Image (cartoon, rainbow, N blue to C red; front, side, top):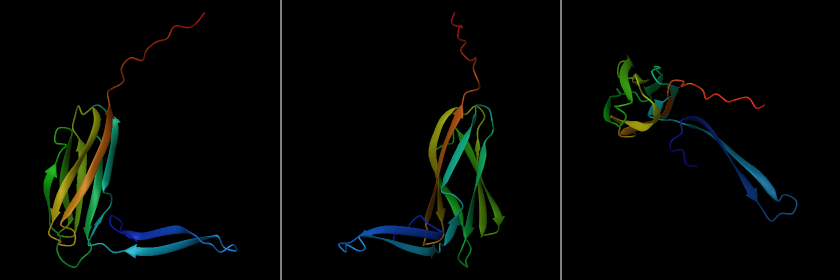
Length: 147
C-alpha cells in the first residue's frame, strides 16, 4: 500500500476475482496508521467569498518528532491576491499559517505556498491554495412579463 500523502488512520480495500465457482469475488481490506514526522491539518486551502469580503483560512503544522521543527517560506505565488502569516503557537512544535484575501480580490485564485523544513524526512511542504471571489452583486437583469 502506498501511504505517501496520508497521515493517521487509513483504510483501503480491494476486490479479488478468482476462478473458484463457489467464491468468484472476495473483498480484501487493510487498515493501518501512518505515522508522520510533520502533521499538516490540510494540504489544500479553499477560499470563497465576495469582492471586498475578507476571507481567511488557517492550516496547522505540528512536529511529531522529539526535535525542534523549523519552517521557512521559500515560494508563494499569490502575493497580488492573498497574504499569509506564520504564527508559532508552540515554540518549535506547532505553527499556524493564516491565509487572508486582499481587499478587491476578484476571480479565481490558484497557487501555493512552499515551506522548507529542517526535517530530512520531510524537507519541503506545499500547501495548495484555491479560491473564488465573486464581484459584488450587480443589478439583476429584469425580464418583461409575457402577455
